[in-house]
Image 1 (cartoon, rainbow, N blue to C red):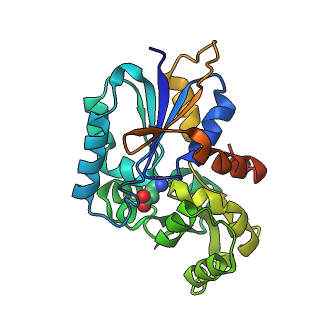
Image 2: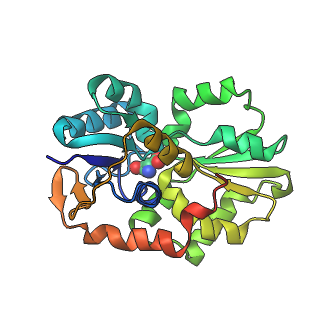
Length: 260
Ligand code: DGL
């Protein structure tokens, strides 16, 4: 059986990560796993999300997996340690890119956009404390963006108003960076860019995550006909549903915003 790199998310957010993976490792065979039956994860309890994800991984045949990218900050914060113990293939997790944002923002404030669950979890609190960044980070949940991405709406007046209302009490001159701590939010870079002063950098973990993936696998030299597969909560489906999202990433150069 030829093995796939699995890219796992609750829904379509991880496609922004898959887009970067295909750019860097174009010959690999990929299976995109979207757990749409249980999406969104961000408004559930950590116990619920843990069970959902561990159950999903029970159904994945490890013989077909070369590596798995957990292209979801929420899932990573809840369950990455357990997955690493259970699975004998490399598991690459994602966490909000606070460290690179600090390097960019210097002493300025950093807005951290993430799901409610990611913001509540100990993993993020530990990261912020290790980096001594409690005073600089302004955490803001943005569940509306998860829903909007699932509906393929990336640039509407309603979204503009939602985002403006999240920032209206802040002095954006004091903000050096916004961390997009949820893979669904990466689609909104063009909208965010249009709302924010140039002095505010948009930071996410997509490029770093795929660099890490590349360092952990031996890239294939052969190309596959069925190089892209799609699994929706355990059901293999046609990949057509993925293609508009990948084209959106291409057309808007979604992964070119990030400073490598
Ligand atoms: N894409 C996911 C993340 O990076 C979460 C979206 C959700 O299911 O709430 O956190």
